[in-house]
Length: 447
Image (cartoon, rainbow, N blue to C red; front, side, top):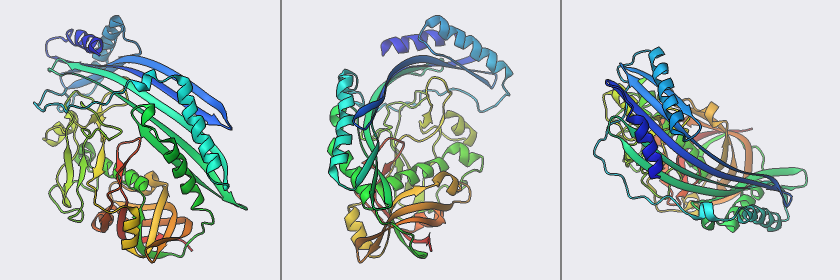
């Protein structure tokens, strides 16, 4: 990685007086395998590199990028970014990050096995997953896809304001999408395993997870409408937390596009709930040493014991709000400028597993999957109404499978209605973890 930082620094050294310059340099390698019917359906290995350059001068920001690591091309991107800045509207809050004295966490997020494992072995993981799913239950009718994927990212960032940082990480996963059925009734399910190199992956766990999620919904029907306690499966909770993190973006809050605007310090959830953004957790799929502006990532409690304690800020949104950056800048790669976002949000776990929470709830609805969550959740009003499937809970045990129902409430009411928080933390690809979560008084719409 020193060569990436050297390139970034050489570009930044060309900054003119009164000009702020940032160079972000990245190198990516990815492998994706899809298996169907015991044969390779698709296989791709890609490698790409590039430089993204930001220039801020007189409150005007410009951005440009090139898709190679040639220094001359990087300087051309700098020239183009300058030109783009000349056409931008002045913004008093525009500017690059400056070192803030926070020391980077000592994270080891790189595994050599992601690159050194032969492609044939990666293909075999997807093949073995498909075989295990097919053989695992006679009700499995089809493995729609069995996938393996990995990514290796090395990056560096330098700026004329004193930023100089490098990072690297690897991630990999296997997944299976399954169709199971009995007679005319068919249901779907998916199973996963994630890690930082192929040896971390548990093929048997991913297979059994996919089989269980598909087969236990066979025979699902609509349920009668009711108000009840819902128990959110870990993956559903992870989806909810990612949406919740979006409403805590400092930029969205400043623009009045969040249900939490102006509520800092208020009690927004039950006292048992603490919600944090912590990219320094090495278990998180989105863990990172530095954010996308080169500031050291840090743990940021967003809700502490039910009280709203912070918003997420990158440099721009922090200046907009008169606050300090929480090192929450993210970017899609060298082709885009940074913006505010979450990497690793989580609820502090409790002690019970899912079975324990179900037993405690007594009667309710285990939500295994939700649909239409992005269109069914209003981040300003907090209105929440999504399609759902899962299993009824009766007498502290799982009962009849249910599909084609809706669950509805508001985010505000759901946070105040949390009854139990599981200790069964699960990290999957994305910006959040999941735990089993029981929430009281949610409307289920069915027959």
